[in-house]
Image (cartoon, rainbow, N blue to C red):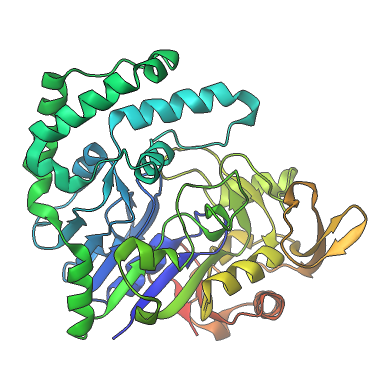
Length: 415
């Protein structure tokens, strides 16, 4: 048995939560493999809104096992708070004891450095994701498994604070003493220790037992630390290959890869966004699509579908098909634009360039439609909506396997 995967194809916020929730009804295990509580998945089920940040979206399937892999950076405080929404998680939720912790000093460093960047700020969520991954890479981080000996962990952290006293003073950060720190860590350990496990061995066992496993990505391909619009990216590998590292799988363990895209584009924070619309259409997309961050509440920048970026992202992830989300947000637009290429220094560019900052979009325009809300069969879609989807398939070189026509789980066309 191979593990299937959901991966974001744009700058995150594509609607992965709804698709994972929909697909999770048919899977035995759902796994998160990277990112932290900077990610946010919004899911609507029977009119009830769920906002998830760390716990996999499979939690809404009472029969599914949910795993937070070693590639995720975990704020124990945020995870414990999120767990309060659900009952009976013991035995259904497992967290890798090799996952690195986001500690309070990571959050304070993140916020202080972002403030110092001023106009050059990256636009992070300020939740300590980058500094925690930084500690992991420089080998000064701490794993959740270390909560099994909080005295040893607290001693190690106090030593770290002492060695880096100059840094904390420069950033005006007050570090806790041993007693305060140990009490905090004890609180985390009391709740989380029963959930810690060697999740790599667990996933291997599930696959060997022919269980159906779904891998859930966070953020989007264009925010990948290596392959995204650097430096305006997140701190982890968001592409499909990141699932192997973030869970302990081999490439041979990966099955079907489904890419998630909106029928238009959005971006949170700073960084290049060639197809961004600065006029009334951009405002209309934001308001109709309720484009405000699940994690931060920040309004998202909105624009038209970027087929060049989508083609790039589909190839790097090895997408078998695309799921088109929020098609209904385009209802009522007389004309709909597709970015089919860029112009840089007077030259047409058909691939994703390094110099995306200076890329101007080259658009095709297609006629809009009145409404697709609630359509559950392809035949029910307006002809112009079908033509738009066919054109997206043609330009991106990837077939469309699913179309979402409203936030509701059931308003979904499966092709």
